[in-house]
Amino acid sequence: MVRGRMNTRHLLTVSCAALVALHSSVFAGGEGWVSDFSAAKKEAAESKKDMLVDFTGSDWCGWCIKLVDEVFKHDAFKEGVKDKFVLVELDFPKDKSKLSEATQKQNEELSEKYGIRGFPTIYLMDAKGRPYARTGYQEGGPEKYVAHLDELRATKAKTDAAFVAAEKLEGVAKATALVEALNGMELEPAVVSDFYGDVIEAIKKADPEDKTGYVKTALVRVKLEEFQMKLNEFAMKQDFDGAVKLVDETMTLDGLEKDEVQRIAVTKALIFAEQQKWDEAIKALDEAKAIAPESEIIGGMNQMREQLVNEQTKAAEQPKEEGAKDEEKEG
Image 1: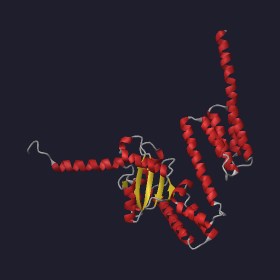
Image 2: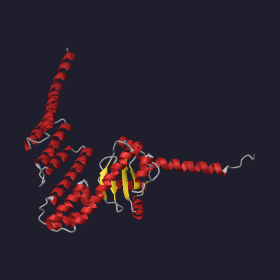
Image 3: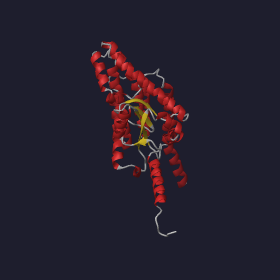
Image 4: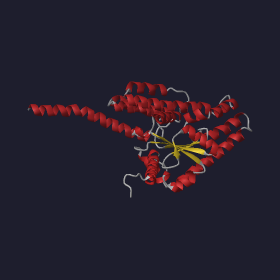
């Protein structure tokens, strides 16, 4: 045996093992996932597959980790989707060292583009990146999850067929068919607006008087989504006055149903409660109740009012208790 001679076969084996381990650590779902969105679209187009895009927080999101452990890591899942999807992982880990700056930037841009609000969010998309279904964690294991994905793909086939059939119609009939096709995907209004603008334009052209009501309703839904996003921004900044002003402005939007206005109005009560302004909170809640006295959320609002009154009473009694303690100390 010659000392000092390097065992190249052993070194090669170790290096390969290290590369496999590194690859597994980068992608929470294991082998078969990619992170380059543009490359994934190209691969999907060439292989005539759809894309399964997982917006995840791999090192902190409990449901994301469960989805990986219970579904994505299993051979039954990998075999069930290999001929149907290009798997894309868009990660938002706490440990940023896991991702390059370019990947982080890409993921942030895509998160905004697809309106991601929570993790995990799974979008099924065509090769152009146009979503046709949205899902997330589902219990039951890999086989059940694959069956769930197959159902969503079947919905896509129906939607595509509906789009084709609608082209043979005219006027309100065409608009109605297109509306039903869009609604069947159950996507967020903002996502539909961003990715199916051509269909919306076709609806407007076929139904210029908006007899279906779709255009007006869609506009309201988009504005409500914008309201929620702006409200979250005010909450992050602890800008309570700005949040109250936003609520007042949003309540005046045309096209809102009474129950929608009521839910927005309840938000004002919550904002005042966060500031421990109990009088204002109770007044705002009473005003919200008056908007739709028979709504399905009245029971919850009554319970909320009791809680606010209790907090108001506690706040009023606290100075008395503190004063009594001070008198005891002086005595």
